[in-house]
Image (cartoon, rainbow, N blue to C red; front, side, top):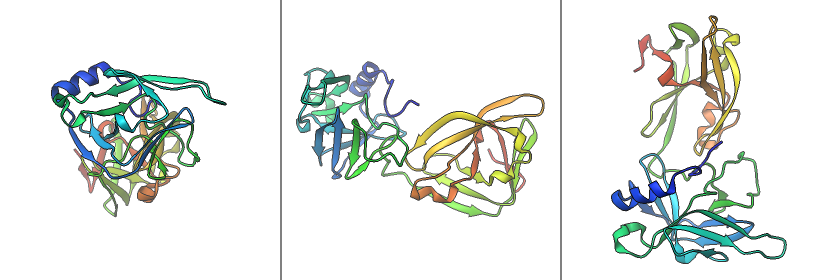
Length: 266
């Protein structure tokens, strides 16, 4: 699965940051370390959270804090860890380097390392792999958590019904309502709330959320053969802050009809 900034057009990102700047930034006192090619290349308490867009931040680090690696002096830079006993040389050209020109504003002198940023791993995959980021002593999965975002999970006995194409596919007298800052409320129901288990077909899709963990998916296949891909997801196990939804299922609000207390949720 694609994670972090992999696949991002760095030239376009660089041009946008030059003309419009980041959405916002926030210095952090957290200790941030980067391991690349089995080598510690960054150990800093001077990282900056940079929102390249409104959704979530990335860590950018001062160029002067790079160690045990070389960095070319260009905006679209290349970072290299040289060969040493037991380790072959390795490079990545997925690096943004901002010179000390004041026109860069808060980004002046920072480096954004993109190619292996915040790799996806199962949450029990410790110790961290040869390429990883650490926030204090914990690996970063997916992307850094947004300090301005929180999750509240509220149990509710308001009856809930889920329909697809007018057909009821799930119904429950209770659910967990997950409120995540800036996003729609997500409703988590017992798996047994699905009116016919034959409606669900396991999907191979997985995604990762830094607040919840690894999600797996179901497709919904109606009696008439119509298929709705990946409209249901669930977490076998969650991160501690979202433990209340472990083992429950949620339907993609935007693709189904959800009724709460008999009223359509818009």
